[in-house]
Image (cartoon, rainbow over all chains, first blue to last red; front, side):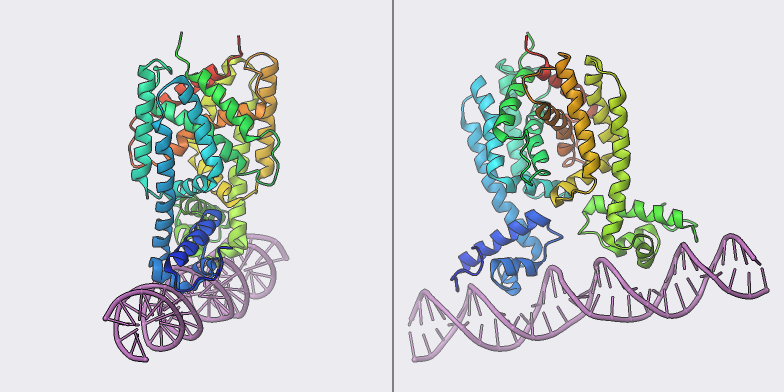
Length: 201
Length: 201
DNA sequence: GCTCAAACTGGCCGACCGGTCAAACCACGG
DNA sequence: CCGTGGTTTGACCGGTCGGCCAGTTTGAGC
């Protein structure tokens, strides 16, 4: 589909086709295991054109990461727009979970970058992190969640409960959904997080 | 150190040096991004000798994975030896956390294999998983932890709480230990897990 | 219709990849 | 003391890698 559509001298369409094909391959096999020839073949253009538009394999990868992370950053910002209440805290886990379910590229991209020690887009991630910490601090001050542990730990646990599902799901893509219906998991994770973070009586 | 020590015609020492050097490089940069020449250089032998001992790059990687996973499997089995009580449940999180802290190779190896869809050693992992599920089921039946969610979910949350620390730590190896002292985190994660899993009154 | 810059192509490059091979080396049993 | 077989080496292979370049095609502006 993304392949050689009737597209000639339409640089924007070419760039998009290359970006899409390259992202798919990079996220599926990893940066080092993907060759420029494969990207060229999948996107329906020549290797030379990729270099014409993006300069090098690394620059292409950078642009892909930048594109995905800005979208990720924007989506998460919306999550912080809502007011602060017990309901929104509970809903935020479901929202984040749903987002990862709908954007599996984000999960894999962060996974590769973590292992490769890639700090690109660290600015965006740090910003989101800081906002999350601030929100948790406010919720603690408001007595909505327990305040006997630092916000950093609360944030880590929140993320850990959500990510756990995707870590496991990565291994059972072969249709084995036994006991791993996403809706059921996120409901229980919400319950567990709520119980874990209830302020001490 | 592991490099060309005074080792001549000592095949066992050669094999060990190659395995160690290759594991370090594979886990640091990934399988695809590591070349046989680099492994040869770091281990202080020639490329040809690596092929003589291990046949191919893939076989070498397999042997490394097998070696690490059998050790991992054995360590985790010991964790299941203890009896079942509220104390052992609490301690098991600290023990698992400590193990990953002492064996960072396991964290990175599982990370690479997850992304690459590598199912090698799935037998060992499935065995550990099954034992964990059985233990959780028993604890639920004994009324030690809540029984209103399936053992699969409880296991995922347990792992998620622990792994969250290492996911984050992977990004801040540059000395920034702000708010991420491992002992403090695992203590809070224990508290949170206990509160989350307490049987409903 | 001509011009010109951008989009695009095929062919090529040196470097390096994983892997092979024949020969040298060396400990050991006879 | 001499083979003999596993260990080790350096030279070498075809193939692929990322990248480059000279040249062709194309569409917009004059």
